[in-house]
Length: 430
Ligand code: ADP
Image (cartoon, rainbow, N blue to C red; front, side, top):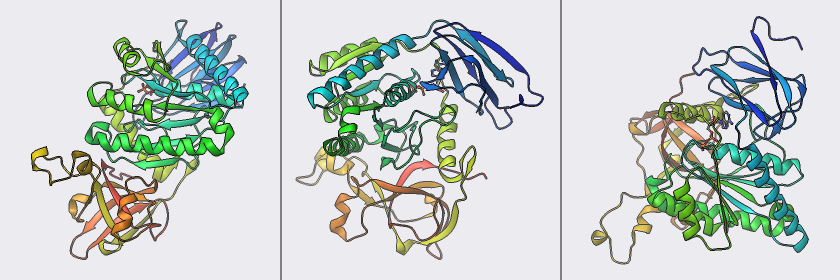
């Protein structure tokens, strides 16, 4: 492997328990940065690097190369920043993993279930990174943990506006993260839990139920436990959603990143047998702007249709007749209690399926294709709690001919005819 032609290279010699942090410039024109381990051992967010292999990181990547024993690495290209830090919480994170592993060992011995862990904290404290680290460490010692993604704004598993669960069978790929095969995905429909907190809590319960069912029939999954990533909204209903999640998943451990008040509140409000642990955030975690978050979301949808890095997908574009599908939005606008029909509660309105009449305003919206069987009115009941089998984007609506054009990962016809509309839009600029 010759060094990338024409690219500047910088060598870093890292002492033990230090990390090299670097950021790749964002923007279309930005140059990628390559990383190569020359001597010693190192890892990126819990995944070990192979020696003399070049890892490529694209625009906007924010990476830490950590070494337990010391190592030297080369960076090729011009990172926006690159520096070595001696001050990292990695030892605390490793100890956390060791404690969880003890719990798994004990679960194995006593024929009980392994640790269910919820990771909480405000935005940009490294929650997703800690989840990835703990999952990779667990799988490296032979466990099969489940990753539960409840961050509807920045999902690491599926497109934004969804919650999901994924069985982890191998460490995250250094460049691409966890291999996403057959995740269980539910439609939420927007990037903030606050738009429909009842639905959010309902879906959390759905995931908990499916996970528990799996644990009953799969001993490895049960011992492996789960790591739950949550949203950065930690006040008001957001806080209540965390408490709800802890209870529905019956979590044993809560890791609070860098938020003492949240730590104290959870200690106060969760049952005493739940271990609530306060952990510092890493100084390397980079705050992301609103625009940056929006770009990441867009990119996630683009990847769903067009692929990622070496893998190119070729999506299909075809017409769908309005009469062939049923489109719903979950949740009617809330109305004052006094105006609700007798016997109906706010819960009912937030979980209600509201039929959407196709019109021009549907253009660019992402629609989830529900896995619910196409059926009569009776079948509508299960739609909210049914996983989704994929996503399409409306690219054009013709109200004259009553037809819409869609972008789809699979050729015609749609596998199911019940579609759920998201607030999220995607403009295909390719
Ligand atoms: P959160 O889930 O709390 O919003 P993330 O885990 O997504 O935060 O981290 C935010 C960003 O910081 C990510 O791009 C991640 O790659 C980066 N990051 C995390 N830890 C480090 C570190 N130690 N050094 C450099 N970048 C880091």
